[in-house]
Image (cartoon, rainbow, N blue to C red; front, side, top):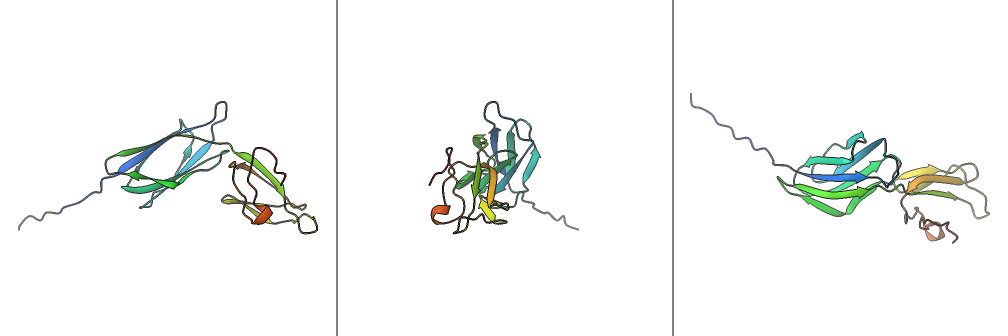
Length: 163
């Protein structure tokens, strides 16, 4: 009987790395979640906080990344994809986590009465108004505009909105 040969091709991966940092004097988050978004499915990297060093093997292609850390604004790199080449590691550098700002507000009807139990969309999360129409959200990115139109869409700023 003649020998049969089989050729197995294994794709050559590359990778990406980044270093998460917190502001001086700030507490490290209890856990962090890294979401790699690209040409192939990759499991989210969820782990307790250690030294902030993150590394992942990725198939070649263009990728985006999101970083979620307890007590900090979600960091996203969606607007600018990065390329991972086979056999190479792409260094995304240091990412300084931002604790963000609190967002507090009140939703009222045309008569000025608070609107209870209304879902207010804040980034990718939502918060409900209380019985008086008040709501609050923590760790909101400065400059974020809550969902809405006209005068309801105001930027989150370090000073109270008076518009």
